Length: 523
Image (cartoon, rainbow, N blue to C red; front, top):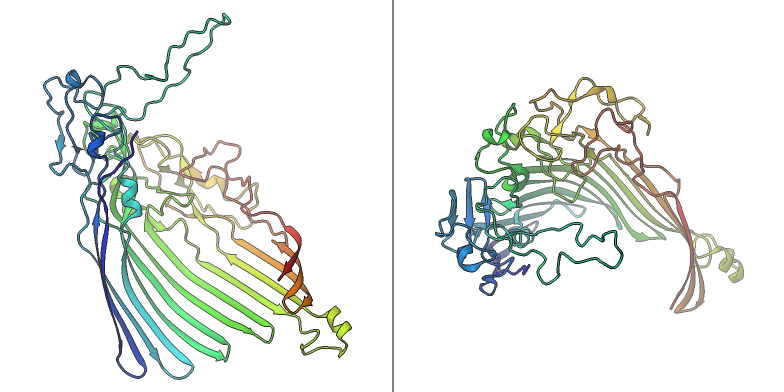
């Protein structure tokens, strides 16, 4: 495969002005505009080559298959990519984009910014801001590659059990040769044949963007210590709602494809820019800069994040949508939602020795008892939400994998969970045939995290610019166990209620205590 793309990029313009409206009020204003050029897949040099420009992709929002470039017929070319019909007629519901590409550019990505800073007095300041940020590039470059090898090409083929040896030693005759491992392979008569599959995105998908705002107050408690309290929030739009689409519109018996949005197409993995999410949080922070041998930072966040079925692929959930036509029913807390987060770190030089409050007046004695430093990091946070999905296509909508959730017949939580019984297993029931489960998304949470790291440093001055440092460091100093997810939880994983591991936790989410000693020479 060639994996080439044509011209693409982002052209950005930005205007900003800073205005001191009054002696106490400062205003920052800005406006950014980005013009994105979606890089189309394939270059002219790949015409007539596997994985080249003569490819296409399904548009399951409109029930079409979009071709970038029409190749010759298979009778003329003799190999893929080519049009199977000897007259060159395209199959039904297949169109050719006159632009020679699949996706459409984004041309209205305006991003205003506003910031305010107001000084109440010498010790109190108020700050606020609002801005819109677009995700301009990473998602687009990946999507540009997804059309590789699609119809009328032959895709990524796989061969198994090649050149198996027979029972007579020395008589193996190869049946597959590297020079031509797939002889005479031509494309299917249509991109809509049963089993044909490719990952796609709505060609008219809009660029994702995030509206972000904050309001905070800072108070100078002391010369070197600041207390701050802030409200932060974001509203995200046009997020990717991913999963199997063109499934049956409703659960029921019979052939699910006959009940699909477009019966001539089997379900495919398809993304739409219909997702929404929002985050609201309160942040409290106490920050002491280093003075008199002590520095520390204490932070606490109370927050909630909600989205519609998709929290992104960088978490155990991915996209967990039961009914692709009613994904708003899966609006719930995000897979990364952590209601409570507390962190603190400190550095403390013990007040013993030369130049410290407690000293003996003897250089030898002060050298022995001095130059000690104690450090620590503590982190506490809530558990992570997770789902449990039922194996199989119980609703009979034609979606592969595990998309369906359980029915709940009671409270899933128990008073004192243990690794052998992390939740109430009796509360879960397999849904009746041809129905969806009634269990909500992300109603369960993993074990909360608690961790303390401690270290003890001792410096041995040698000369003014040279010293030896001894370090004792203990990670997870109290050897606290944080239990992992129950069995069957993961990237849209499943587990049946009759599985002996159902409801059990079989792993930990942290490491056991680790202690290390080191000696460093600083110069």
